[in-house]
Length: 446
Image 1 (tube, rainbow, N blue to C red):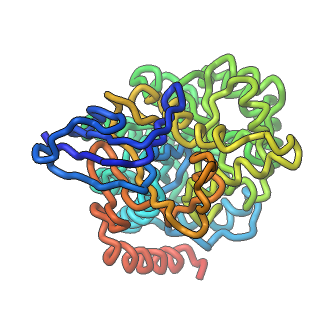
Image 2: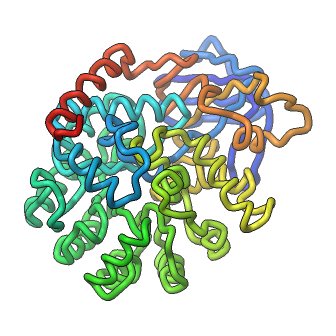
């Protein structure tokens, strides 16, 4: 039984009372055993003591929309709108992936996520080689819901990404049965149909049934782009969310990325069915997709969390960036008090935990919960003065990913004093360069 004692830290608990205090956290195996001011613990009986005086401990961030398979494409899809971005860059590159490139793309992304304090992700891979992404996730120590992307429709989809419905479903189930629940539940499977445009009704109906059978999440995109919505309406006669509801997919197991262009009926469906929305402000701005109406959704008590999306439509996977953007982009329209620091920090932590169905396990620092947390060093020019400043305001508006000093996931130290413990940077970075050179040549995009 491994134990870690974190001593004398400023602890931002995100518990129901919003407690923030200076104290200690005792971790036993993968869970928080005790938390409070001046815990009475015999340090001689503890495996590791972390002196966190003048440090701030927060719950690990939960990002509910990520594409690890796209991390290699960073800088390769700049200055394009969604459909051109997909057709001209992302689909050809995804079609060129091999086992090795998927593996290093995932490690590259996870390394960045861990370095910036993210401990849980909802990840959507590409059509092939997803087992190698799961291998990278497993070795890295990150907590993840992931799944192979499903695409059984679309004339403009590159041939290697075109699937037969039955094969897409069978491969997804095979991956689920291999990886769902791995490492005591640290890894879970999520069915991942890309979006309505690239999926037949037959596939989506089967996904609904399989999600219910296995009680796992469904992770897809919806209402990200006006052109996308026009295509969906032309093909189905319905808007995205109405169509997904028509198929029986709109329920508490559904996570929808983006949801920028919702009408009142779609918001009502999302609220009444308990659907979760992943807000990706950085991606939405860079692809010129629009600004989601998150204040309205939150007023309707819709579950809204945050995600960075993928590296080629954001260029980083940094939750500090997403929190700041989520707050600032709403203020010119809704006023300076809209989307305050506490609101977006909640979306980044316990709100994400709610989306993945783990609010009783992660998202806050409480006794009995999983030990998923980040230790921040906020003793610096850009975060001072600290006197009489709300700690959450400092984190959301002033802190950066460079301030993350240590990351612990499932009670395991995966980064300590900014040194990665589970991913070898000296191997991953050169392999990432070699991989993208190979893919660009294969896709004829150099």
